[in-house]
Length: 455
Image (cartoon, rainbow, N blue to C red; front, side, top):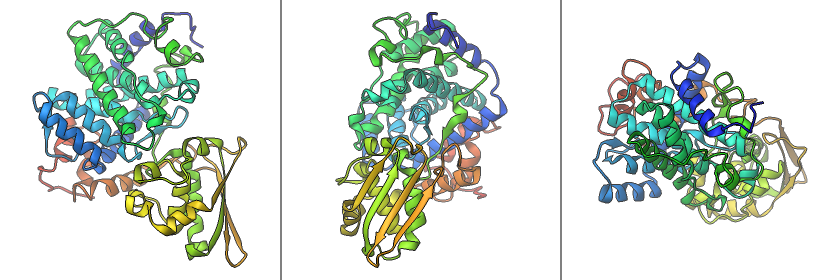
């Protein structure tokens, strides 16, 4: 293990600077491209959501020079406004990537800093992809260093660590040297935000959006010579001390550059809290065996305790709250035989048959049940009880989404907003090809021609 008595901030930033100067290993490059495609697709899918409409409207009225895009929208915004709106869109449906060990969603804040800055600066695609990968990695390693105490204390780790990931990515794109990287990281670290109380509200996607803007601002100020506080991570009044007394600073540097946390990033098949996904798999599997949902007399969900802790809303008021109601995800999946964005519409959340199924759902949490495991028992009016066991949820590290499944997910998000555009966006999300980042910006812009669709 790396000695935790060292000057962690300086060593971490120096190591990130060296790492960002090297080509990405092929497997890491592929992981970065998968993460980028997924998060661009989730941003496009939520580009017309109420939260994004508000953020874009504010940026149009009060933002800076309109130079940066928001995926799926025609407007060009100032850098900070585009970062905020893009980060909100990427996380709005809770459908973005998730690092299971920390429950960080690293793609949203990092992409929301990379995309506006790269579009404004015409950054080469290879540089942008490398910046995205290193920014995600920095965010995840910081998350490992403060987990699980940080999240357990009530912080929304995607917001608090997201600003640092965004700053690192922007620093790489700006070509900052090691001192510049240290300033960017330090300035971002003092802007951490986000509490778990925001889960189930528009404030939750605000966290990665504002984290992207904060990180981008930190890097731009560092580029101009604005210094950050030295040793911000390890000092008695610094990041670790403020956010958790149970930090593991050695996680920042142990194996950095040899082992990539980004390769452990996972992709959701369902747009809601990931801890409920094994129960959703079970409910979908049971749906045809149940037949008429009106015949269900009881539901017992055997799950990990985090399901109840994080998704215990018994009676959600709307679609945002329903994303943190395991009872709703089970009820909707049994009644509808699927769980997509449609099952989180406000009208369905309030439907009487769904409300009845939620009311008769009981949870039996146990620490002996894996985080990606669940058993579901459904009692029926004819006296039968149907059961299913899911050892590992779809989208978990044990059952990751394939490239084809990820493309299918992206298609479902992109096509309602940008019809006929999925193939171009999938190809352009590689971004280290001839078209670079500019091809992705064009493909995700509504005014671009839809010719060339090949998928």
